[in-house]
Length: 284
Image (cartoon, rainbow, N blue to C red; front, top):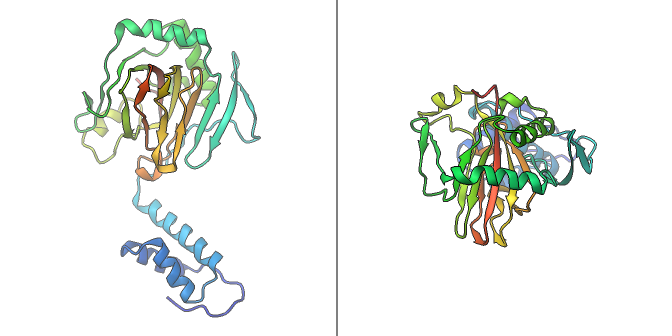
């Protein structure tokens, strides 16, 4: 790397970018690369900017491509969102990754109606079998659950229409609404909702509507303790408050999306949630 000993304005050159990528590819930690740049005379703000943009550009060439995702109408930082039949509260927003917590997304009557309709059909929850494209029991997921077909009843139709307006995403791109029940000790260990492109079963799975691009979790019944939705990569935990919801998206099917999340163990009481996954295209 060419030494920069002068204090005048410095620019990020193609040579500097190439050098940063070379160091990262060789396994040198970012802090070591940064210190080397500073020792060579690069100004700290220029060195940091070069490190960030060079690594991001390099990552983009070796990762799965980014895809369009639903984006909520938050440009003007609204406190409330008008979803036609209901006004919901924007409680918190994380921009990278995109995570939005919404208050009063469901009414108490809607929560009860979903649980009542789901209760007779509950069974041990399954996960997608990424190696085959089917489903399987997974020790990481210890809840009971069921799926409604899209538009199965009036309550489901109303909630799906609300979700489509919230996400500005076609209603037909959504999977059927899933209901999950977690008793004491039940949990869902951290995982990703997208389908791993490296797994042999993924081509079969994505034939039905492409990749998953976003998730909405709605809380139907809240436990006394525990049961939060965790995002370990960003140190975030969303409390499972009845009627509230959390939305998050993932622009590429890779851990760099920082969309790792899980359902923390219920310590006391019972938690019920409704989950909606959104796909790239119409889900059939």
